[in-house]
Structure formats: structure tokens, C-alpha cells
Image (tube, rainbow over all chains, first blue to last red; front, side):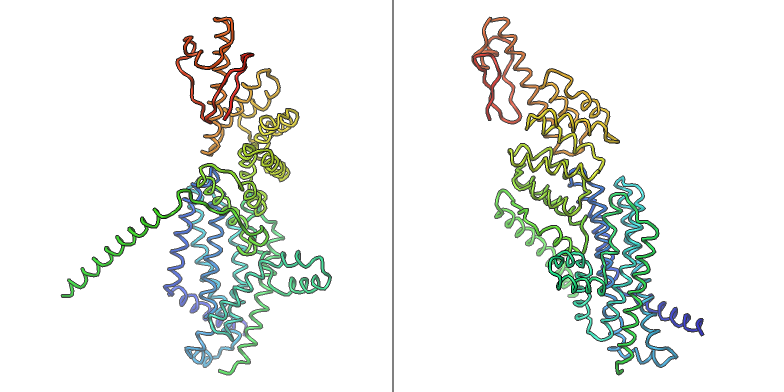
Length: 257
Length: 269
């Protein structure tokens, strides 16, 4: 039984992965990402001797932003496209439940985004090495954390994709991105007003706290996160993604096709 | 016919590129002669949120903007202290802006010197292990504030920072042991010139070394004149007329020198 479910999930994930790799827009974004990473060499050269810092900070930012762009572009249309193109009927005519489609697509998309991000990381590592920064171990950690964050964002995008049009999903996801990176700021602003503080605290714990995945400043200055910290963040990511995928499955289950 | 159409399109593309380049040239000519890049920015926490938490990238961009601003204003430093404060607020462990501020800002006046010292102390408090911050801080105390006690204190911190170059270590250790203050100051600038990879800092150091060398040369020439003529010269031309100097050297900062009745070198900008 479990093997059959896992096999179904793997088949859906693999087909999603292959479908994404055939998308020409993905390569367009990747090309821009590679160009940007190489361009940081120039920005480093005009930084008054702080080449490595500028290249590493902007390079990691580039990997993050282009990774986000790829994720949002691919994920927000993922389920909606299947419904719109009626291909969902074909999938559901097989012995496959809706939650399996959601989870399988999530896995395939995460794998294709991870492959793109790892490609960008390889270019970044070459650029840093060329600039004399050696092998940037910290960047591997930062990108690992980024992949955990993208797990949450993909799940969030799929959640919205089950009932909203792609453009609306993009707007929702970007809004959540900004909120997710500003929850600490929100707590700080609300700390002097008790009522606001309670509301801010509620939002802080309910909404995805994406700053948990941001260790770029830490690794940039030579420190590495402790292993138990990595485990907690990974658990947070898996739990939040699971919550959103369950929500997406419920929404899709209630939808009349 | 098809070939004509195809080559016609190529020609159109080439023509459009040329036209775009021409418009670009015209547009560049219409720009003000001094490109001014405003250093105004959002507060650090807001900027950090707007950049999706990419604080160090925001710090890098703001740092590059600051450098462009300095270059665009021909070395003007007005407002640079505030901009550097924003850079280090975004990434408090980005060490070079602290050092840069401490070295460059004091020439802008007392208020800027105070801001530079505050930035330098904040940089040292971050425990960044960058010898440049205490060393430049010592220089500011020594040169601008004439506070040799604090200068000696920060020289000591610089000398004991791991990874400090030997020349700097020696210069820092020797601080306060010599009676000739001008020579000591020159040594500090020479050490900075030899150990900085930053072109702006190196140029500043080179100008200071040259400036002090000229003052030393003029001091020696005045002393030689007194020895030969029995009195002090009243102006620098007399040194040339007496054959002590072949010509009056030009100061890199555009300073004009004079001589007081007591034979002391005086100068004004």
C-alpha cells in the first residue's frame, strides 16, 4: 500500500520535474542569474578593496532572488494550469487521489527548483574562487537554508494555485514573502502597545517566519550555524510545508472539477 | 525579394542601434557636469524588510552608492558619515566602512570627526579583528584632536590585533617614543600607504607623505638659511635666491607656505 502511494508520488514528481525542465522560461531566468553572478565581479572591483564581501553578499542575494523568481513563476500556475487545461481529468481518471497530485507536484517542483539553485551555486562558487575567496563552505549552508525556505514558498504557491488565478497567486505569495521577512520588525513596532503586541505575537507564530532561513549575514562573516539549529529550521520548514499542502489538498478536494 | 527583405531588416536593426547610441550621447551631454547621487535612504530595518532580509546585499549596494557619490562629487564627503552609518546598521560586521569613515571623515570638521570616532568605537565594539579601525582611530586622535593619550591607547589596540602587518605593528609600537611629531605622523601615513589596497586611501596617504616631506624640506632649508645668513628668511623666495632650494615645491593640498619672524613655517589653504 505504502509502496504504491510512494510510487504514485514519485511518478507525478518525476513528470513535474521533466515538465519544468522543458520550460524555456526557466533557462531564460537561469541565464540572467548566471550573468548577474558574473556581473558581481565588476561590482566587487569598484568597492574599494572589499571585492569578496560585495561579490559574496550580492552573489548569495542573486541566488536567492532568482531562485524565488523561478519558484514563483513555476509554482503559482502549477495546479491552476492543470485545471484550466483539463489535464487534471486525465490524471484523476487514474487511481490517484487529489492529495497525491498536490504532494507529487510539490516534490517535482522542489526538485527542479533545487537543481536550478544548485546550478547557480556552482557558478557562484567558481566566481568566488576566481576572486580569491577560496571554497565558500558558508554559501553551501546559506543555499541549503534557502532550499528549505523555498519548500515553504512552493507549498504556499501551490496552496494559492488551487483556487486563485496565477497572477493573483503571485500577488499573494509576494505579500506573504514580505510579511514573512518582516515579522521581527512587526513585533518591534508593536512592543509598546499591549493589544497590538498580542496581535503581532499571534501573527508572528501563525504566519511563515521566513527570516528563520536567512543565515547569509552569518556565513558571510565566517560563522556557520550549529547542527541542532539546522535540524530545528528543517523541521519548521517540513511542518509548515506539510500544513500548506494539507490545506491545498482540502481546497482541491472541495473544488468541483 | 526575400533576401532584400531580410537584409533590409538587418539594416534597420543596425540603423536603430546607431540612432539609440546617438540619443544616448545627446542625453549624456545634457546631464549636469557633477552627477549627484542622493545618499538618502530608508531606515535600516525598513530597507532590510524591503530587501526580503538581504541585509548584507543591501549594505553592499549602499556602500557602492556611497563610493559612487564620493567619486561623483570629486571626493566630497558631506553626508557620507550618515550613509556609512546606514551601511553598518544593515550589516554591523562589515568592517571596512568603519575604517573608511574614521580615516576620511575627520578632514570635514569637528562634527564629522566626532561622527568618525563614534563609528570607529562602534566598529571596535563589534570585535571585527580589523587593525585598520583602531589604527585610523589613533590617527584621528593624534592628527585632528591632538589627543595623544587616546591615540596611544588605540595604537596599542591596533598593534595587538591579530594579523596586523609588521610595518603597522612597528609604527604603532613606536608611537609616543619619538620627539619629532612630524616624522612620526609621516611614518603613520607611509605605513597606511604601504598596507592599504584601497586606491582612495592610498592616494590620501601619498598626498600626506608628500605634504609632510615638503614641510620637513622647508624647515631644513629655513634652518640652513639662518646658519648661512644669520637671520631667518621673510619669504620662501629668499631660499631659492640664496641657492638653498632649486624651486619651491608644490603642495599636493594646494597649501601656500610662509615664514613667521621667528623662522617658523606657517601655512594657509
